[in-house]
Image (cartoon, rainbow, N blue to C red; front, top):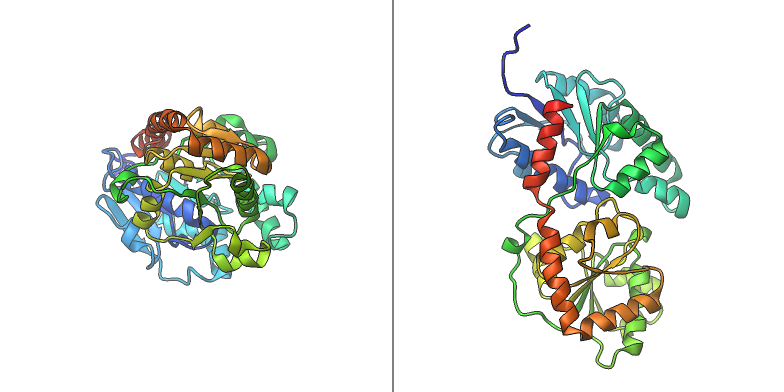
Length: 372
């Protein structure tokens, strides 16, 4: 049988992805960057098909990509469940793909083509163990079941850190040989930031989700203010002031500015670039992009020592126990006051962040798609 095209045809299921909503912000950005990277490769140029929606067309319809808008209610939960369980293989099958990539980690029950599932983390399993009841229990059980079934069904599984791979193999009990670690890229953030002279503030990134540890950031900052002679103010991105005031007594007197979620990349990267130090105290991550972005922008980093984060930042950040406010406060004081240490971490950060490029990731995905 002779194939009509010598190039491989790759379908990427982006139907459910919408920029800046829910817990899929990171997944959206990975899917967008991966699509553009693969579209630039000779082996796939003109043979990338994206199944998308009207809201993500602007990001996914680019040179070398066939964008196919699915005219269906992508914001309807029930339809999205039906799509991911049963409908996507029929939509993808129209293009006779060699491989279908599922960036959200969910493969359909029946696969007509070879599937590559990207599992970014096992946070639902983490919540089942540590924050049971925070998420809708039925919904979380469904997600865990879908992740398990998808990993076992997929021909290849991609994850974004060795820590995540170990977690997948241990939790889901799948063949380690089919799970491939391909690190995310972190490119061109400096092109988007209006880099100015560092200002006297500390920047922390969090969210209202408990594993992002916003309360731990506040406790650590209180300790820092207690021991520092001239404490710097804290800017907290990803959390609104009203949300913090409901949960932290006397929050208004803590010299903390909350700026919520910044949808503008330029605004977010400019905020990072202007900070004296960057604080990231997450309890669990699949990759942990914000510390890498801070390092690429030349900002010294204090980072949680949990899950994949030591693997990602290496020796280019101060690692701390995120639930020990005294240790974190001491690290904040040390890094704010020690110019030589900040210079050392800045140079290490430049070198470490350069490792995480979409050029490197593109080649790894290309190798996997061509030869798996």
